[in-house]
Image (cartoon, rainbow, N blue to C red; front, side, top):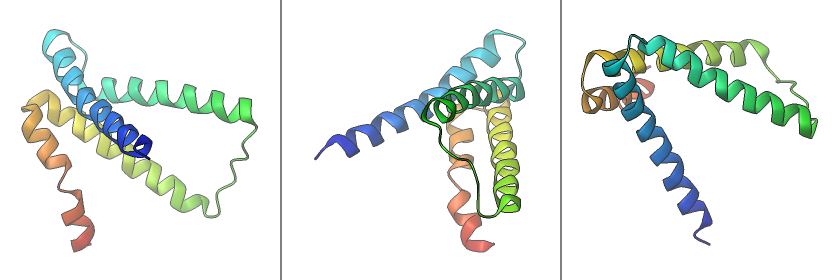
Length: 107
């Protein structure tokens, strides 16, 4: 019964900790926010590709253009989030990131 809530909280903890670790890395090394986003997506891609291959999941989207458009926008948003983390505080970057429902409503 509580498994979904626990998994949701763990997922949120992972998302929140990713910005904290991104800030630590950008402050202590020459790695930029865009590079952090690249490696984050690379690790996710490898894990997803392995899962799709192992479970033989077919990847045939109904509307390829929309899927590619969403991928482009999500990649851009993640790059901008990690650049914001690099140049401002974690609080400000996360507040800006959480304004997306307002823009969805407007557009």
